[in-house]
Image (cartoon, rainbow, N blue to C red):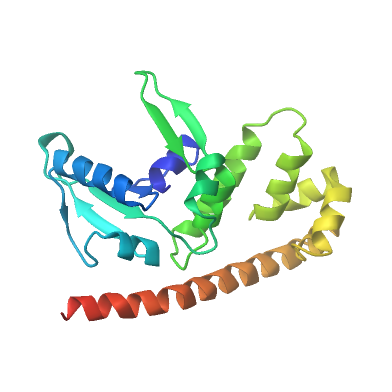
Length: 225
């Protein structure tokens, strides 16, 4: 669900860790603990691994000591701001098979984009690259669902204006409700689109800070126990 997933979707990112979205129930926790033991991984920060902490939205951080993964950091979460419950994420996941037969289960691209709407500086350029890569991977005529997705999530001014010209009816529908900045895209107003994109980003960053504030307070209390 993190940088490694972005690589699979064609938006290369240097990542020092591997992030997993986990279904938080007792049986799955046992599976996770078995995998963590095999990796000889240890928790490197608060909170400790527990169903309660995962269900509350905390991330649990591990560092691997096994020779084949020495130093690798693994982060596990079960709940994310603005992202659907795990059962829904699993239903619309993307499944890929590597050359060696390994199966990789990724967050769907729309869910990954949503998960990247954080207060972190590095996530916003990644959203832009994910959408650009998805558009570039569709050389022919895209489906309306694809076009709607790009219109909802694209963060590149030129791409938004081009999409608005190509899919004017869909753009007008979305501009009237879900994404008002598309009105500027319909007019070819580059400055207006850029200003609105900045406003969208700042609003999402503020919402993410508000979401994490009580969770950060919980972490501070854990550190002082």
